[in-house]
Length: 88
Image (cartoon, rainbow, N blue to C red):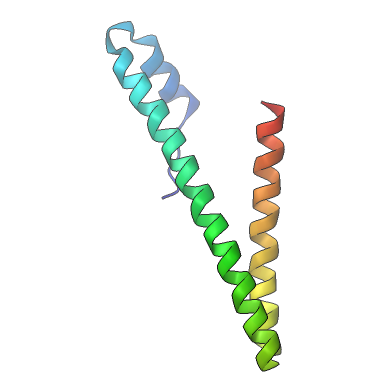
């Protein structure tokens, strides 16, 4: 789901006035991918919280550390994206 959209490709699409629909389509694709990535990440965060609770209940240290590490990484990614959005 992680697609790479280059700024150059976007400018080429925008520069072609007769192909304005191409630039709109590219922009829509970018926004759709960003939205889907965000929803997937939020869903995984909730799932990890449940898995952490279960690991605590079962006193499974290995699972607890694995899930908390992944949760921490996802939350850092989310915070970075929110920071970038606030700058724009």
